[in-house]
Image 1 (spheres, rainbow, N blue to C red):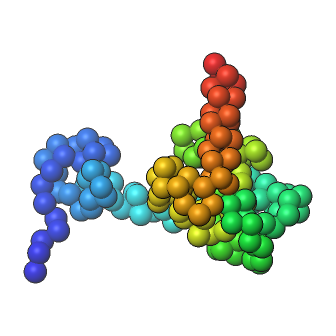
Image 2 (image 1 turned 180 degrees about the horizontal axis):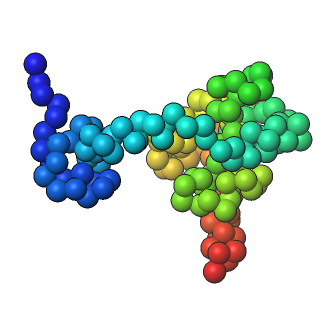
Length: 151
């Protein structure tokens, strides 16, 4: 049986040569920091306002995928319904546009997944390339506006 505990430098509290209990990617957590991490994960998260915004967008827009044109028939507030809302500029990198309606495009869950897993070139060369090109043009415009807004 493999021993998962080993010595190393905790990347959280920066304690050198301590017992490492958990590794997540490049991060190493000592026993104490790992327990803290697990407790923090159980805390309820503060609402971001996305669910309210998604509800508003769902009421305002046609339930049509911007890429395929297919009808989006999902029950609101379910897992697949949330997947229909695609941020063009990622929330982490562009936080001020997290709740910008223009930054959110309705897509089928498959088109949303393709957006995150395929390259821009692959998408533009695909069956719905003209629609993807329009999405990437909107994304570029939003980036330009964002950069003006944050300067």
